[in-house]
Length: 548
Image (tube, rainbow, N blue to C red; front, side, top):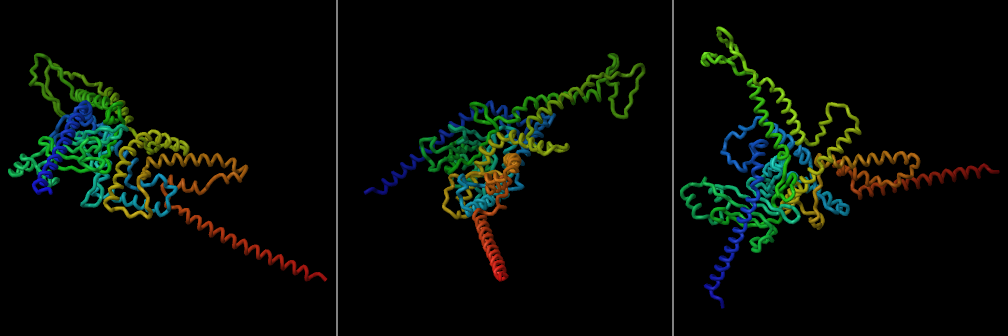
C-alpha cells in the first residue's frame, strides 16, 4: 500500500518535471525569438524609412520616439502619406465595403444541400456579419488599418480572439515591430512570437493566477505599478517541440523575457493570427510593399522640395550685393512697405533662385510616378467623358485583371482566415443556431460579394450576354435550338452573380408551381375537349334531325 508521503513525493516529482519541461519550452521559444529577430535587421531598417516618410504616426522599428514628439519634421513633401492613405481607403472599399454584406458562407457541395440548409447558412452569415461589425469587435478599424500596413510595410497582422464580456469576436492589429513570424513547408505562417511591454499593474490584472517574480512583488509593495516589463507571447504548432504543454493543435505561451516567469499556458484550435503579405521576395518571410518600391522617388522628392523652397525663398527675398567698404549694419532689412537710404548707388539684389520653376516641373513628374505606383483601379476614372458601353465593360475587365492578384492574396491570407475563425468561435460560444441537418463543417468556404468580387462576376455575366447575342442569330433561323439552353440554370447563375439569390423561389416551389400549372392546363384542355365534343355532338344531332 502506498503511503501518503510517497504520494506527496510522487506529486512533487511530477510537478518538478512539469516545471522543468515548461522551462525547456520557454528557453526554446526565447532562442527562436532571438534567431528570428537577428534575421530581420535589414528589414527593420527599411521599415523605419517607410515609417519616416509614408506613415510617421504608425510604428517604430529602429528609432524609438517619445510620446507627443513631432514625427513630421523631416517631411517636406507629403505625397507618400497621401498615396498610402488614398490607396488603403480604395482597398477597404473594394474588398470589405461595410455598406452591404460583402461575404457569406457556403459549402463546397452546395448543389446537394437542401433548401433548409441553404436558408440556415445564409441566416448564420447575416448573424456573423452583425457580430463582426459590433462596436466591441473593432473589425472595421482592424481591417482599415491592415490595408494601410499592407501598402506601407508589405505585412499586416491581425489577432482574432473572442470578447467574453460582449459575446462577440475581437479583432486587434498587432505592431509589426513587435512580431516575428515563421512559415511552414507550404509557405503559410504558422509561428508568431510577439515581444511587447506591460506594466506591473496590467500584468497583475491580466494574469491574476500567475506566480510573479520577486522583483514584481517588490514593485507592487512599493507602489511602483507603472514599471514596465518585456513580455513574450509565443504561438506555434504543438508538434514543433517534443515537450507537449498543450493538447490543442497550437500552443500559446506567455512569459517575461527577463526572469522567464510563465504567466499563462494555453492553446488554440486554429492559428489565431491572420498574417497577410503584399508580395514576398524569394527566400523572405516578410512582405514587400508598394511604399518600398516608391521609396527612392519619395526620398528624392523630399530633397528636391526642400531645395525648391530654398530657391523660391532666394527668388522672393534675394541676397543683397553691397560694397566692401559699406558696413553691413547700415544696410536695412528688406520688408514689405519698407524703404532704404543711399547716396551713390543702391545695393544690388543677387538673383540666385530664379530657376525654381524648373525644379517644380521635375517634382510634378516624380509625384505622378509615385501616384501611378499606388494607383488602384477605380471606376470613377471614367467620369468626365462620354464613353460607349463596350468601352466601359472593357475598362472593367482590365481593372479586374489588374486587381485580381491583389484581391486573391488578400482573400486567401487574411479574409478567409478571419472569417473562418470567426465562424468557429461563434459556433463554440453558442452564438450560431443549431443546423437543421447533421452536416460536417470541414468543407465550409467563404463566398465574397464585395465590389471587386462583383466586378469579377460581372465579367462572367458579360460573357453570358455576348454568348446569347451570338446565339440569337442562329435561333432566328431555327427556333428549336432554344432546347439546348437550360433557362433555370441561367436564371440561378445570374441571380448568384448579382448577389440576389433570395429573389428566386426554391426548386421545390418552382416544381410545385409548374405541376399546378400543368394540372390546370390539363383540366382546361379536358374542359375544352369536352366542349368541343358537345359541340360536335350537337352538330351531328342537328344534321340527323334535318334528314327526311
